[in-house]
Amino acid sequence: MVQSGLLCALVWLIVQGVDRLLSWQTFQRPIVTATLTGLLLGDIRTGMVMAASLEAIFMGISAIGGSIPADACASSIIAVAYTILTGADVETGLALAMPIGTLMGSANEMWKPALAALAPYWERLAGSGRVKAFRTQVIGCGLFLDRLPQTIIMFAAIAFGVQGLEHVMNGMPAFIMSGLSAASSMMTGIGFAILISMIWNREIGWFFFIGYVFQKYMQLPTVAIAIIAGVMAFTYFCMEKKLNDIKRLAENKTAQSAGEEDLF
Image (cartoon, rainbow, N blue to C red; front, side, top):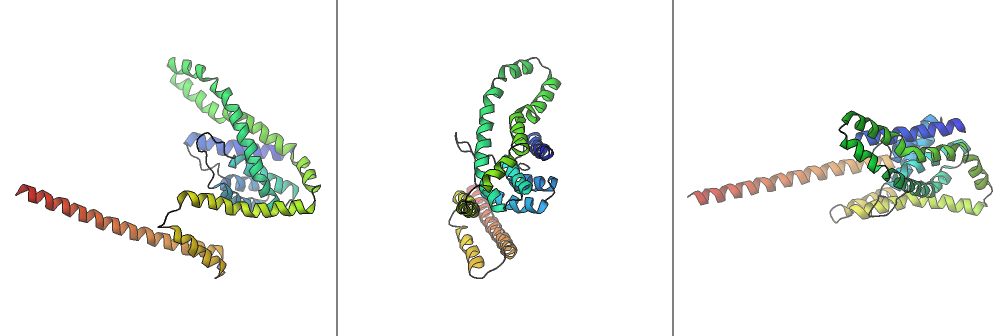
């Protein structure tokens, strides 16, 4: 378990470090972190299956105002590690992802006051004019110091907590485990619902109902629906672009005609 904990902590540091250096928020998404965790732990199939489900769950979750969202990266790594190391069902691992992410999100916020206390040091270093030292220390702080508590918690949770969690889950009654499986199945739908509520409008809303008909009544596989949706989206984009070009051309002609009338 110690080796597995080190591997998972390494995944955490790599994806967080790359995103910090490149100013991205791409590699820390569940679709990447869960797959990498499954690859390093020797079960990439489980990692990829859970990656798709976890990405769907966390896709519409974002930090708004003072709210603290669940940590999608940490919860994905720990959930996949628990599922692979204990041989648990994928549904059980998915059900544990959200509470784990909530706890890790709170741990992240608790460390921020300690980082804020370093502000006077950074101000003095910036005022000294030592650009190279400032750049090196900012990069080092972003890669290691900023992620230190989460890395320790990640390692401890997997190296020493997976077996205890396995005993707890094995001791639960069957109806509770069935409830967890049902809850994990609903979480994917809830994630999509949150995302749809953010992007819904009258122009694209009917695509949702078309997809529902394809899956529910025509029994099309997911890949086929995705291909059809891609073709429809590309066609819709081309039509919108053509209409915008026509409108722009008409506006230019109108402006040109108005200019000629003013001239004469």
